Image (cartoon, rainbow, N blue to C red; front, side):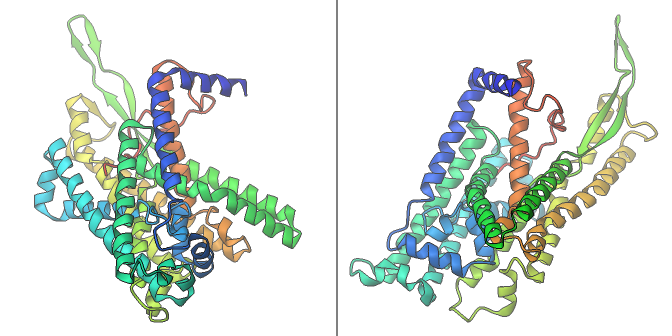
Length: 455
């Protein structure tokens, strides 16, 4: 405890780090407050009760978790940051498929600025469509009629209700996007990931209390303790996966310049088993939100069966699609992070070589094979963790708590917390302080392989 208190004092004594932490907490607080600002024409208390009952065991309940409860309350931040992530996915795919965008990516800062501008414009379009689907489900579903105040008001028609709230929801998402970018630039950690994490953490205390009350009804507190132990073990397993590293040995040839000798040392190229971090999970979940948005355009009872299956997190179709998307996005994002040809060229330029491998093309192929081999088990493991909530729910865990027993929520929480701790550690170590994990240093914080996303 004394060591921890000293570390906190060191963190607070670093002016830049203190300023970044306070700025991050300020924007996260604004984000949480915004999730309680209700759209006009909606009775939040009635809507939250009806939405909780209607969306139980549904992907919309997961959307509500990511939005910190704003979805069920009918708040201006109900759509959260997910339209922005969907737009980012689309732009990254376009940047690979269309040569004009490929050239734009190679233009450096100016090209990235243009792509970010296109992403923001696309976000407005995505948010408008999702906002219309979100509001249309209230009007088309008789169970939500009691929550619509405008039905008994002469001041607001149905058209005015939809028009006004589509604009407010779009503005809320764009403001959320702006806060995420400001946290990334001037705060601590990846802003987009932190906003999602805050929404998830806001639901965690209620989930634990619900599981505890559920255990009390069954008079099985021992089982509740066992669940917590298993939950802790799953978290440890996710941490090991996230921090697992494959080291490639690199030797540097000796060079004598004047009276000094350079090189002649052995170093390691660390490649993380899950270099893509939490981004494949976030990307896959953003894609899976689309069926729920499309279902919002149908009248009650008119949604096709296959579409209903994709919106049910417990269905085989939903989980099979999620596993497939996670594996594909893991390879896709790892390919964006690592460029074996460039790594081999940099190594050759600095007189480095991998023992037994010829420099140049063979080195690039060797690195590419290593990345491909270690990415597959990592992708499969996080896919299994992603479907753990379904397994936990079938074993009797309360539905609300089972979301944290694995799945997207747990992977995002662990990944974002570790990434933020690594950044704090880097500030402490630059000033020769012990890091937060001084007894067992976080692997990968010196490698530069921690996934950062340019949204």
